[in-house]
Length: 178
Image (cartoon, rainbow, N blue to C red; front, side):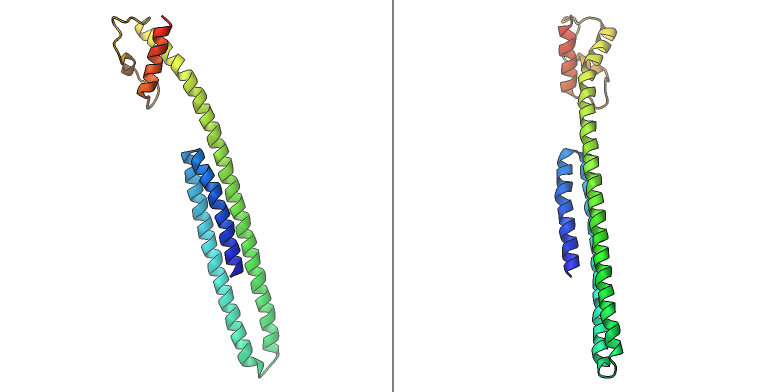
Protein backbone atom coordinates (compact mmCIF):
# COMPACT_ATOMS: atom_id res chain seq x y z
CA UNK A 1 0.00 0.00 0.00
CA UNK A 2 2.91 2.35 0.73
CA UNK A 3 4.18 1.79 -2.79
CA UNK A 4 0.82 2.90 -4.17
CA UNK A 5 0.88 5.99 -1.89
CA UNK A 6 4.40 6.86 -3.06
CA UNK A 7 3.30 6.34 -6.65
CA UNK A 8 0.33 8.67 -6.13
CA UNK A 9 2.66 11.26 -4.57
CA UNK A 10 4.99 10.99 -7.56
CA UNK A 11 2.02 11.51 -9.87
CA UNK A 12 0.94 14.51 -7.76
CA UNK A 13 4.35 16.12 -8.38
CA UNK A 14 3.74 15.84 -12.12
CA UNK A 15 0.43 17.78 -11.95
CA UNK A 16 1.99 21.12 -10.81
CA UNK A 17 4.59 20.81 -13.55
CA UNK A 18 1.77 20.35 -16.03
CA UNK A 19 -0.05 23.35 -14.51
CA UNK A 20 2.99 25.56 -15.23
CA UNK A 21 3.03 24.29 -18.79
CA UNK A 22 -0.69 25.11 -19.11
CA UNK A 23 0.05 28.73 -18.27
CA UNK A 24 2.75 28.91 -20.93
CA UNK A 25 0.57 27.95 -23.93
CA UNK A 26 -2.37 25.94 -25.16
CA UNK A 27 -0.03 23.26 -26.51
CA UNK A 28 1.38 22.72 -23.07
CA UNK A 29 -2.17 22.26 -21.79
CA UNK A 30 -2.61 19.32 -24.10
CA UNK A 31 0.71 17.83 -23.01
CA UNK A 32 -0.19 18.32 -19.36
CA UNK A 33 -3.51 16.56 -19.94
CA UNK A 34 -1.66 13.67 -21.59
CA UNK A 35 0.82 13.67 -18.67
CA UNK A 36 -2.00 13.48 -16.13
CA UNK A 37 -3.78 10.77 -18.12
CA UNK A 38 -0.58 8.71 -18.44
CA UNK A 39 0.32 9.17 -14.77
CA UNK A 40 -3.22 8.28 -13.69
CA UNK A 41 -3.38 5.23 -15.96
CA UNK A 42 0.03 3.98 -14.81
CA UNK A 43 -0.83 4.69 -11.17
CA UNK A 44 -4.09 2.76 -11.48
CA UNK A 45 -2.26 -0.13 -13.12
CA UNK A 46 0.43 -0.13 -10.43
CA UNK A 47 -2.23 0.02 -7.72
CA UNK A 48 -4.06 -2.91 -9.34
CA UNK A 49 -0.85 -4.95 -9.60
CA UNK A 50 0.04 -4.06 -6.01
CA UNK A 51 -3.41 -5.10 -4.85
CA UNK A 52 -3.13 -8.37 -6.78
CA UNK A 53 0.32 -9.02 -5.34
CA UNK A 54 -1.01 -8.20 -1.86
CA UNK A 55 -3.98 -10.51 -2.42
CA UNK A 56 -1.65 -13.33 -3.52
CA UNK A 57 0.55 -12.64 -0.49
CA UNK A 58 -2.47 -12.79 1.83
CA UNK A 59 -3.62 -16.04 0.22
CA UNK A 60 -0.15 -17.54 0.57
CA UNK A 61 -0.04 -16.45 4.22
CA UNK A 62 -3.46 -18.01 4.86
CA UNK A 63 -2.37 -21.28 3.29
CA UNK A 64 0.86 -21.15 5.29
CA UNK A 65 -1.09 -20.76 8.56
CA UNK A 66 -3.37 -23.71 7.71
CA UNK A 67 -0.52 -25.93 6.59
CA UNK A 68 1.94 -24.77 9.31
CA UNK A 69 0.54 -27.40 11.69
CA UNK A 70 1.30 -30.08 9.13
CA UNK A 71 4.54 -28.85 7.60
CA UNK A 72 7.12 -26.08 8.05
CA UNK A 73 8.13 -26.27 4.40
CA UNK A 74 5.04 -24.39 3.20
CA UNK A 75 5.87 -21.54 5.59
CA UNK A 76 9.42 -21.48 4.21
CA UNK A 77 7.98 -21.01 0.70
CA UNK A 78 5.59 -18.22 1.77
CA UNK A 79 8.40 -15.96 3.04
CA UNK A 80 10.30 -15.88 -0.27
CA UNK A 81 7.02 -15.36 -2.15
CA UNK A 82 6.27 -12.32 0.01
CA UNK A 83 9.80 -11.01 -0.53
CA UNK A 84 9.42 -11.42 -4.29
CA UNK A 85 6.08 -9.61 -4.14
CA UNK A 86 7.68 -6.70 -2.31
CA UNK A 87 10.58 -6.61 -4.77
CA UNK A 88 8.21 -6.71 -7.73
CA UNK A 89 6.06 -3.93 -6.27
CA UNK A 90 9.15 -1.82 -5.57
CA UNK A 91 10.49 -2.38 -9.08
CA UNK A 92 7.15 -1.37 -10.60
CA UNK A 93 7.04 1.75 -8.41
CA UNK A 94 10.54 2.72 -9.54
CA UNK A 95 9.56 2.23 -13.18
CA UNK A 96 6.43 4.34 -12.71
CA UNK A 97 8.50 7.07 -11.08
CA UNK A 98 10.98 6.97 -13.97
CA UNK A 99 8.18 7.19 -16.55
CA UNK A 100 6.58 10.05 -14.62
CA UNK A 101 9.88 11.93 -14.60
CA UNK A 102 10.29 11.32 -18.33
CA UNK A 103 6.76 12.56 -19.02
CA UNK A 104 7.45 15.65 -16.90
CA UNK A 105 10.69 16.22 -18.84
CA UNK A 106 8.76 16.01 -22.10
CA UNK A 107 6.22 18.50 -20.72
CA UNK A 108 9.05 20.88 -19.88
CA UNK A 109 10.54 20.44 -23.36
CA UNK A 110 7.16 21.12 -24.96
CA UNK A 111 6.79 24.21 -22.80
CA UNK A 112 10.23 25.39 -23.95
CA UNK A 113 9.28 24.82 -27.58
CA UNK A 114 6.02 26.68 -26.97
CA UNK A 115 7.96 29.63 -25.61
CA UNK A 116 10.20 29.53 -28.69
CA UNK A 117 7.14 29.42 -30.96
CA UNK A 118 5.67 32.37 -29.09
CA UNK A 119 8.93 34.30 -29.55
CA UNK A 120 8.94 33.54 -33.28
CA UNK A 121 5.27 34.58 -33.48
CA UNK A 122 6.16 37.91 -31.88
CA UNK A 123 8.99 38.36 -34.38
CA UNK A 124 6.70 37.49 -37.29
CA UNK A 125 4.09 39.93 -36.00
CA UNK A 126 6.73 42.65 -35.83
CA UNK A 127 7.60 42.05 -39.49
CA UNK A 128 4.01 41.55 -40.67
CA UNK A 129 2.89 45.18 -40.15
CA UNK A 130 5.66 46.78 -42.25
CA UNK A 131 5.21 44.14 -44.96
CA UNK A 132 1.44 44.74 -44.98
CA UNK A 133 2.14 48.50 -45.25
CA UNK A 134 4.33 47.86 -48.31
CA UNK A 135 1.48 45.83 -49.83
CA UNK A 136 -0.93 48.71 -49.17
CA UNK A 137 1.44 51.19 -50.75
CA UNK A 138 2.03 48.91 -53.72
CA UNK A 139 -1.70 48.32 -54.20
CA UNK A 140 -3.12 51.75 -53.30
CA UNK A 141 -0.20 54.12 -53.59
CA UNK A 142 0.63 56.68 -50.91
CA UNK A 143 -1.98 57.44 -48.29
CA UNK A 144 -4.57 59.99 -49.36
CA UNK A 145 -7.05 61.11 -46.70
CA UNK A 146 -9.61 61.98 -49.37
CA UNK A 147 -9.69 58.50 -50.96
CA UNK A 148 -8.76 56.22 -48.03
CA UNK A 149 -11.65 56.09 -45.57
CA UNK A 150 -11.49 54.53 -42.11
CA UNK A 151 -11.02 50.77 -42.21
CA UNK A 152 -9.66 50.73 -45.76
CA UNK A 153 -7.00 48.18 -44.77
CA UNK A 154 -9.71 45.62 -43.93
CA UNK A 155 -10.16 45.08 -47.68
CA UNK A 156 -6.91 43.12 -47.67
CA UNK A 157 -6.13 39.72 -46.18
CA UNK A 158 -2.56 40.28 -45.06
CA UNK A 159 -2.34 37.46 -42.54
CA UNK A 160 -4.66 34.66 -41.41
CA UNK A 161 -7.13 35.74 -38.71
CA UNK A 162 -6.02 39.35 -38.83
CA UNK A 163 -7.56 41.62 -36.20
CA UNK A 164 -8.86 45.16 -36.41
CA UNK A 165 -5.90 46.16 -34.24
CA UNK A 166 -3.51 44.74 -36.85
CA UNK A 167 -5.36 46.55 -39.66
CA UNK A 168 -5.20 49.81 -37.68
CA UNK A 169 -1.44 49.40 -37.12
CA UNK A 170 -0.99 48.92 -40.88
CA UNK A 171 -3.09 52.04 -41.57
CA UNK A 172 -1.11 54.11 -39.04
CA UNK A 173 2.17 53.07 -40.64
CA UNK A 174 0.77 53.71 -44.14
CA UNK A 175 -0.30 57.25 -43.13
CA UNK A 176 3.04 57.94 -41.45
CA UNK A 177 5.10 57.04 -44.49
CA UNK A 178 3.35 59.57 -46.76
